[in-house]
Figure (cartoon, helix red, strand yellow):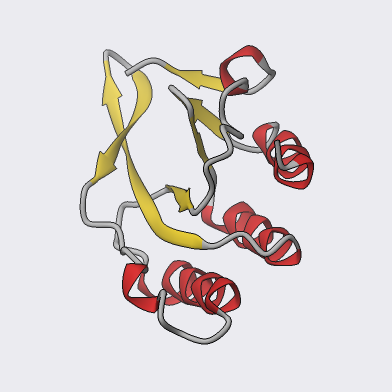
Length: 126
């Protein structure tokens, strides 16, 4: 287990919303997460976008299937840094209207998300 990634997940789960085994973050928090992710050199493969929906007066989140994929950056020199830079730019400059949360696809075989549902955070079941 990558302890640094697990520690990072533990830090940010308190600031996000858990949907299944995915940690959804407000864009500003996600930018801080990316800064911390850069320090441990984990590659970002893409950004997942989340839209709020209200059902019977309760807010849930649904995924927007058009989040960016950074697989084409794999051949770039210093791919980890480039993927994080690209993700930050996207969140700061190109985030579609209505998107209120983001999550990330990370290039790791580590099940860093495995225990999210057992920890403290806001839970989403839809």
